[in-house]
Image (cartoon, rainbow, N blue to C red):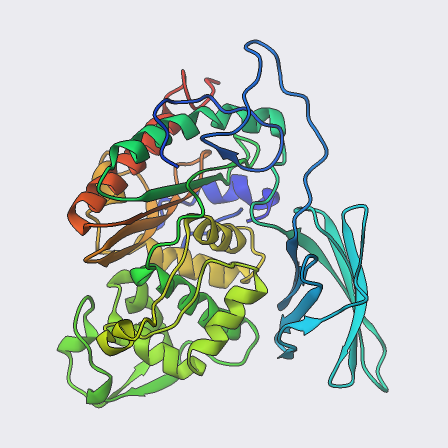
Length: 431
C-alpha cells in the first residue's frame, strides 16, 4: 500500500471482510543495529548511545520493476531478464550484453519481434524504466518502483528501533530444539521506517498450504488484466475431490463453482479441492511458478497438487521461505503486484481465515490479523498481516519438524512480535 493510503486505511480496519489497506539459532539476544537492509540475529552492533549514520541503500543481484499490469525482472548476476504482463510473458531471457554500473542494470533484448529496452536500478524503492518497442507502433515507456527482497527501509534511523526484536526472536528459535524455525518481519506502517528483520529468513521448509497464497495472487493478477472475472464458473467433478482441509469436499459434484468462491475457500478454509481446481484452471504449475520467478523469489516452488502423496513420494514438493513469503506479502500490500481492489479482496479473505490455532491464538482477543496457515506432519506455519492501526506489519513464521511442537514455536514467535510492537519500552515509541 502506498504511503498516501496508510492514514485512510487505518480507520477502516474494522471492516469485516474487505479492508482498504495501504502499504540461525542464537544463544544470546543481540540488539542489532544496521542502517540499511534487513536485520538478522547475527548482524552488526553499534556503540550504545550513538545514532547510526544513514548509508547508501545496498544493491541487490536481483530486482524487479513494478508497473501497472506487469513486472520486469532483472538478475544482474545471471544476466537474465523477464517481462511478464497482461499482454504476455517472455520467459527468462539471457541478455549477455547487460551493463551493470553504479547500481543500475541496463540493456535491451528482443523477443518475438518486440524489443525491451530497460534501465532498472538494483536498489529497492528507486524508479526504473522499461521501453517496449514493437513494429509499426509507437514505443511504450513504462516506469515504476523497483522491488528487491528485502526492500531497503525508508528511514534507517526509525528502522533501527525494530532491530532488538531480532534478538528476542532468536531466543525463541533457539528454544525450539525440535523444530528448525525461521521468522521474517516487515514494518508496513512507516513507524519503524519500513524496516525488515529476519531470523533464519532463508529457512526452506515444505510450504504446505502457504503456497496457496501464490495461487490466489496469480488468479487475481488475471482478474486485474481483464482475462477472467470472479463470477466466471468452473466445473468441479467428483474426480477433483480430495480430503484434508476445506469445505468443498462435503458438497455434491459435478457442479459449477465460481472463481470467487474457489478463491475465498482457498484461503478461508484452506480448501484443498479449491487449490487443485485452481491449479488446473490456471494452466498447471508453470504459471504460478512464472509468477514466483518474475518476483525473483528463489526459495519458492509449486511442484505438486494438494494431497498428492504419490508426487510427494517421487520427491515433488512445494517449498518456500520466510523471506519469500514476506516478499510476496509486501508486494501485495504496496500494490506492486495487484490492483488495490484485488489486494483488498485478498487481505479480506485472509481476515476470514478459520484455522486460528496459531497467530490469533497467541494474541489477545480482538487483535486484527489477516493470515494463512500451513500444516503437514513435518511442518507448521502461519503468515500474514498484523493489522494493528498505525503499526501494520507483515510476518512469516515457518517451522520444520513435528507439527505439534512447531505449532507452539509459531505461537511463541507470534506473541514475541506482538509484545514488541505494543510495548513502548521496547517496541513502539510513546507519543
